[in-house]
Image 1: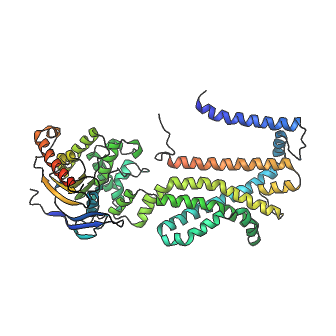
Image 2 (image 1 turned 90 degrees about the vertical axis):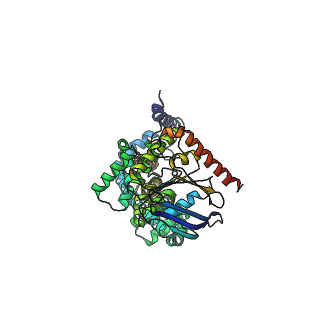
Image 3 (image 1 turned 60 degrees about the vertical axis):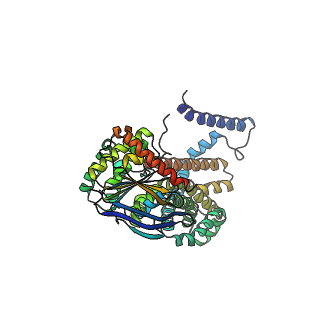
Length: 260
Length: 251
């Protein structure tokens, strides 16, 4: 078997084995479904509650995408501002760090007090996704080849020509790495805020479904919602990885296949 | 002809001290006439790259006077310094793009510059797909595309293997003879400087100063036959002795 087949087959074998052990454990030990539902029941619940769960998934995904887009735009714009005007960087960078290091779980309940619920969820998604875009893009903009900068100086390029023709393309790999992290984090931010909102009894996203099902001891539905959430996370990761690959495939070492 | 040509670059008593306190140049004098091919030769750390960057306006002299063209200078770095995200043609076109040149005019100039260095077939390739020598050719084409009156080269072939370097030496001389532009060429290779230049400026290290100026009156075109001639060997010995003496004074 060649390496490529193995790379696809091995995770599937592991998954099958895990599901089998899970199923056997539930059956043999006779675990009640309100403690641990078997895989069959989870899939059945997923099917039975499809309408409700799909609606919730859409709500969560919409907020995640909105949060991600705003974080991408804000992070890139602020990174450019930091790069162009050092004073702005000195003034604001510490607060960007504080925003990042303060646990979002602790901030979410506060945001829910001051903002309407959907807006608070969006704000949480934005806060956690914003920093990796900012930090990575700033790093990329600041690590341009010095000789290329000298070359642009030699030809008397304007500041905006340097930014547009040199710094932004040079920073693209780091920027895309930041976006890839931000995609996963904006889902986490949205989920955290929904859980916080759920404990206050409001909301309609997937995470809220998990909280609500927990209160009702509807454990199979909790699992079904969790499964959907992690599938959504995987889909976001792959979509952003594909975007990154498409943008870099012709020139960046990370995306070019190595021949031996 | 070159002895009567007007001076295009003139450095008088130029000194350069970096913020770290390192004195790179001290009392450095250099005159280059239009159309001349001059090499700056010295060990690493003798300030020859610093002198070149001062001529280009990429660095400012701490003292002394500098007369050099402001603009329309071509510069070739030690590394190819190409933009990895852009094709060879786009890299070569960059100086024209920055000057907002018209599309038709730019395309013609890029095609001509690529043809001069023998890269026409690789215009759509990306830098990572090229060998070291071809990357350097692309870098030279970019420097030529504006038809600069002054071409500054900072050890451009130092990282290449000898066979490739000999080839590029020949091609550079051919281009120089076609265009008759002024070239200031920085190198630490005695053999390369004698092969290429009309005049060699030997520098002392720490601080960089002119130790000797040696004329190489061998006629052009110089080809591989010149490289094998006793005449060439004689100049090489003369220059090597001067370099030895320049370094002996410092170490």
